[in-house]
Length: 199
Ligand SMILES: Cc1cc2nc3c(=O)[nH]c(=O)nc-3n(C[C@H](O)[C@H](O)[C@H](O)COP(=O)(O)O)c2cc1C
Image (cartoon, rainbow, N blue to C red):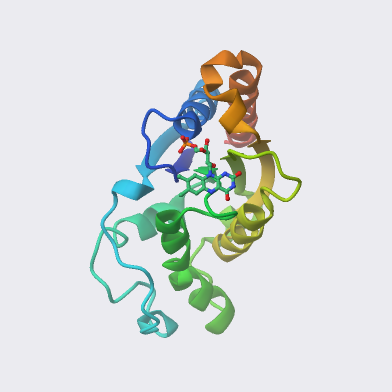
């Protein structure tokens, strides 16, 4: 079986610039010999976390919605790609709720000291973060990076690489920047190669 990579799209636009970047990273990872499953997060139907804390005792969530089939994918993946625009200086709402619903993994790891992620995967899996902001501010990606770092810690999927593209309001269309698209492809390829080298 090929190494499995999960790719989370945080943008609501399936043809937008974030999606273009993710498409390239996926192509790179597939070229390296991995199987990539794309999750279009804004199209999932699920609630934000209600703090019912069923997950303090159980290894799933009490709310039966589109997050339930996602948990085994997050548990078994070999690496992760997150592609997201900056919204209000942070992670877009639906993707943030997706991260919050991973409290299931937090409780297992930190409260019960019984991580859901298999021990051999905990050592090796990595995250590639791709992000785009409209503006060109020095702290554009601070919010995205803090939340993503916490999410990666919870999932035992080390934040290993990133491609952060600012000033998209002026760049307008990433198709005009083949070097950036190539960089996304190369980073996807590197993420995938790290897995196929050892499998
Ligand atoms: C609701 C909303 C909030 C945004 N907030 C920010 C922001 O705080 N900082 C920023 O630099 N860009 C912000 N943007 C701009 C987006 O990051 C930018 O348009 C990006 O290219 C969108 O990527 P996409 O078209 O692939 O979804 C915001 C856009 C939206 C729709």
